Length: 417
Length: 133
Image 1 (tube, each protein chain N blue to C red):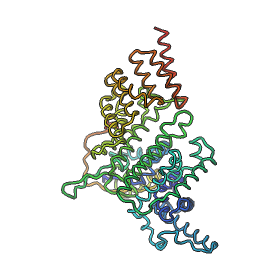
Image 2 (tube, rainbow over the protein chains, first blue to last red; image 1 turned 180 degrees about the horizontal axis):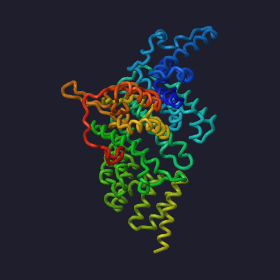
Image 3 (spheres, helix red, strand yellow; image 1 turned 120 degrees about the vertical axis):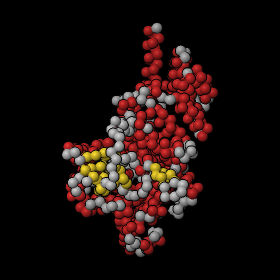
C-alpha cells in the first residue's frame, strides 16, 4: 500500500544524509553515490512489499554500506590485493542498525557534502550543477536541459568538477567551530546561487528553472534544521521564501518580467510569505543582523503591502542603509536610491546615483533606474538617452523589450502633447 | 470522548511535495474530513509550518531559555493536529486508518483530551496572508 510517489519523496529527502554518511565511510564520492544508488534500487524492490522503514536514511546508509563493502570484497578477490584500508570503520559493519544514525555525525556529513560542491576553483554554474546532481539527486538530463547544454556536455562538466574536488583535500574529521561557520557561510552562498539561477531566469527557460527555487528552499530548510539557531540561515531561508512567493505573478505569458508595481498581488503565495515572516521574526530576536536577514526584511516589506502604495519605503531605505554598511556595493546603493525616490522624490535619488555611474557604467539596471528618475523629473530627452544605454547593456531580450516598451510609451505621450 | 489526533510525518518529504501532490493528498483527506464534519465529530484542526519555524521555551531551568527549533528533534515531526469527538478508541482507529490510506507515511497519535477550551472563533483569521503577521 506504499505509493511510489511517496517512496520517491522519501528517497530524495534521505539522500543528503545517506550520501553524506556513505562519503564519510568510503571517502570517495563515486563509491558513495554508487552505494546510494544500489540501496535505492533495493528500496524500490522491498519497500512496496514490506512498507517503508521508519528511518529511511538509516536504512539506505546501512544497505548502501553493506552493498559497497561486498563489491569491494568481490573485486578484491579478483584484484588479488585486499583494499580494505580504503574503508574506514569497517570493523563495525555488523553493529546494530540504530547506531548508523549517529546523531553527532550526521550534521557534519550533510554540511560536508554541501561544502565540497562550493569549491572556490569551481565556477558558479559548476557549483550549482554539482550540488543539484550530488545533493539533490537531479538527473544529468534534467540539469543539462536547464542549462541548455547536451547531456553529454553536462556529464563531462560534472565529471570534471568531481575530479577537481577529489583532488582538493576535504577534511573528514569533524570541523572545529571556526571552520564549521566558514563552511556554513560558503554553503549558504551556494544555496542562494541555486535559488538565483532559478529566480533570475526569464523567458522560455523559466519553467525549467523554477524547480531550482524549490530545491534551494528545501536545502535551506535542511541547513536550518541542522543549525537551528543561526540567524543568517533563517534570513537566507526567509529571503528565498519571500522572493519565491511572488513567482506566480512575476512573469507574464511570454516569460517577461512583470515589475513589482504591476504584479497581481493576489497571485502571491501566502504560505511562503507567512513562513518567511515567521522566520524573520525569529531571526531578529538574535540581534545579529546580516546581509540575508536585511534583504529578507526588505522583501518582507514588499510582500506585506497589499497594494504598491502601501509599501513602507522609508523603512526599506533604512534597511538598505544598514545593508550598505554590512555589504557596501554600488548596486545596494542604487537600490537604496530607488527607495529614496519613492519616499522622498526623484530629485534626491538622482543626486544619489550620479556618483555611482562610473562604477556601474556597464550595468543595465543603473540606466533603467536613471531613465525612470529622469522621466519623473520631466527630463524626457535625457531619460530617452539613459534608456538607450540600458537597451545596449540588456542581458536578455526580455530586459531590452521591457525598456523599449517604456521608450515607446514616452514617444506616444510626446506625440499626444 | 474528545481525542486529539497528532499527525507525524517526514517533514522534508512533506514540504517537498509539489502543489499538485499536496492538493491531491488534501483532496483525499478532505473526503474523511467531510465525513467527520457531517457527523458533527470534527473540532478545530490545523496544519503546522515546518519545524524550522518553531521556537521552544525551555522552562525547566531558571531563568527559562528560548531555543530555536522544535521541542523534540525527531525523524518524523509534528505537522498538524485535529480535535475530534469519537465514541471510543475503536471508532477513532477506524477513522485514522482511513486517513492513513489517504496520506501514507508517518504516524497518527491518538490522545484523549483531558481539558478542552474552545476559545474564540478564529475562523475569520485569514491564515497565511501577509496581514496576519
